[in-house]
Length: 264
Image 1 (cartoon, rainbow, N blue to C red):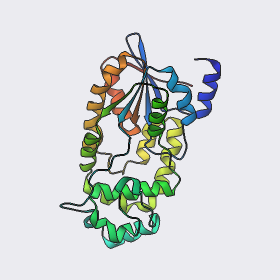
Image 2 (cartoon, helix red, strand yellow; image 1 turned 90 degrees about the vertical axis):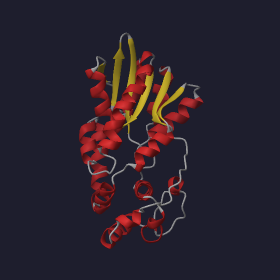
Image 3 (cartoon, helix red, strand yellow; image 1 turned 45 degrees about the vertical axis):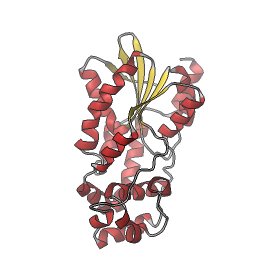
Image 4 (cartoon, rainbow, N blue to C red; image 1 turned 135 degrees about the vertical axis):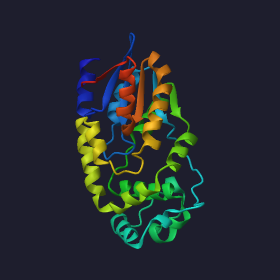
């Protein structure tokens, strides 16, 4: 890459980035935090023009599934003490773009209307917005790729991702909500370690997050690995959620692919 590009990428501090070599072809794997307090738009503007295609874990276009409670709701998981702590820490902030419900006192009036996973994500995304975690690397990359007429591919359908969310263990949701007073510390640890490029340490900071389980991470790692293989024949930028990077990288290495940290 030209020297000016190396200097710009270094300033962007993108360190969760690996090269994946298959034969004589090279692609790039980028660990993407779904939301972050810092935008990596400048990095993406410089990097995307140099690849043939951009591949995403899933489609991040707006998608509004049916989130109405059926057999069990988020409210059924919350005792009064947990509900009080969540209300105090999160307030009445609600990510209406995701859940498509009215704003208001979510914990007391709306928790019983939403499926547990949907109610939890509404709270969590609202909290992230409150804390300034408003940037999505995947959304920025998708918009940029389309504006540059780059071929775009998705490894999972929105329906497959929705099915994974519905398998979010209720006990883990309940435990994580009960730790609401620790959320700020968890986010701080994740950011500090992600910016260092220490993905494993970043994930340990969020080890209580409800999706950190076999059903949602481990089983999907194999599917994501298999579906990304055809894209390694060309020069691709592949964006995966940070939690999938260790498992996918381990599979790539064990099956003969050369994976190395991309040093800026």
